[in-house]
Amino acid sequence: MTTTMALGIVLFVLMMLVGGRAGVRAFIGLLLNFGVLFFAIVLVAFHFPPLTVTLVTAVIVLALTIFLSADDDLSSTVAFLASLAVLAILVLLIIPVEQWAQVQGFGPEDSEDLEGMSLLIGIPFIKVAMATAILSTLGAIAEAAMAISSGLNEILEQHPKVSEQGLMREGMAIGRQIMGTTFNTLFFGFFGGFLALFVWFSSVHYTFGEILNDKIFVAQVLMVLFAMVSVILVVPATTWIMARFVRYRRRHDLPVSGDLTQADHERLQQEALANRKK
Image (tube, rainbow, N blue to C red; front, side, top):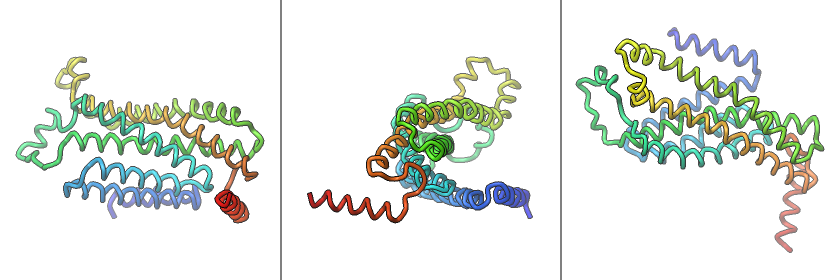
């Protein structure tokens, strides 16, 4: 048994003990996401359009991550719609920024590892950099969206008559609370992952200006900043969509929290059919 397999088994056992069925679903979602990402890499390697493959992969990963980790339809639906909206905005931001930054490809620090290898792979590195930046934000988007939607759903269960303005205030308050911890998670994840690079910079006596202009360093900083921007955008997006769902349910005399019953679905279908006849 390899170390990776042993740690995977430990992870599965802990997720099952702590999270129960939700933990098992989350572990299955993790495996499915790995398979989806691996398949996306294969498609890009076979010269399918990197951005198209990335966008389809991003939607699938968000759906698997959110719907396999939530127990109620309201939280998962709101989180998924908010994630899609934020993803669309980020794509419009990432494409021009990556084009302007020109940090695609490899830096001089990679020259020893790449010696003797050909870089003529037939895929534009700028598109690979855009795809990498988009995929690196998915975890932060899904995590923040689920945290806010679940928190708002809990508030609705405890206070079903809360006003839309009050719900918006509570959503922004929850968002402000998770921002700090999420930003620290992203920062220390970046710092820990690139500790060896920082040691390299120190050993070869890079100046502060050289560090700020290093291609590898700038590329990673951009991905962290994209993830931070995504978390900020998720807060108002999730809160606003949740408020719209609550308004819709109240307008049709439906429960504002939890899943809709079969009777609720039948009544909505009857109302829709009546509106069409009019």
